[in-house]
Length: 371
Image (tube, rainbow, N blue to C red; front, side, top):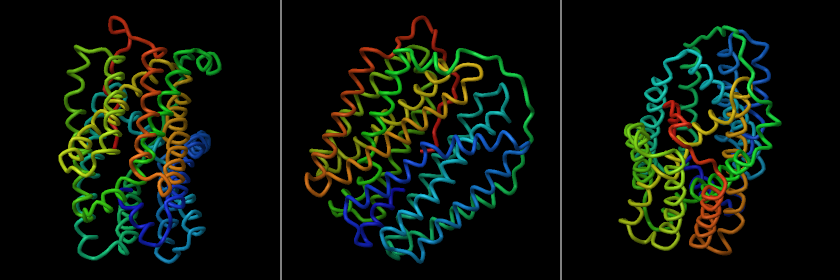
């Protein structure tokens, strides 16, 4: 993903077209996880669906080796991301099922996603710097092929259990604190749209090569890993609401730093270290709040809504907005708007998101992400 924007620009696509491609990739998260979850109800072994989705996503992406016009790229992005985004939540669900009550081990498993991201981004940056951006689709296809082969080695047979029903989904979604929570998730992920779609393009404009761009992306994920290691200790002394407020506030600061001070390498380094707050800490708290709000039979639906509203709708709107404004207003104002979206989320968090009292919102250690 860090090199997708650069690759599309190298093909001659304008910023608005780049924004559309990223919006399509994020937008499929609105529906594809729910569709695969519905299909999985009729399967005793969900890994078969994941293997099929992995194979289709690999084959779909491989067409990028031959098709380079805008409409073809959009179609490829849609098919690839539809199956890719569909299988990820299912694989997480299988992982948690395998762990049973030992959910603390989840953090250690997901940590390897961050490690893999760092190694891949740094390695790909070096290769592309030596061979050129034209080889980027080949490297992605190799990664996707390896994922499919890995999935073929796994199996899972679901044991059906009766889950005690909690509140109805309709009742949960009417609560003011839940509405506020999803507004915050949407705004923060929309603010990340400019970052995911155009940060690499901005760095390239500032004369950083592919190796250096990969190193800057890796720094952000290194900071995320450090946060995942220590955040459980933090929660022993600080409430979830306080961590959420701080992470959103630092997100506001991060986008302003990139907007107006990106000419300074020191500022870029500090901004990337803040990825631990703007994504890492934010995601950990949101996972816990989702666990709190959606209990019993509504749990899976709550996790799907979190993914769809935040990473789907938020990411799609953010990517589109950044793409439409980039050429006319420039990077400074695009990231300033991202900061304004985060500031709105900060106000909603302070005003309406539930404040935990006396450990009522317990932390389960399940909030580690792969990027």
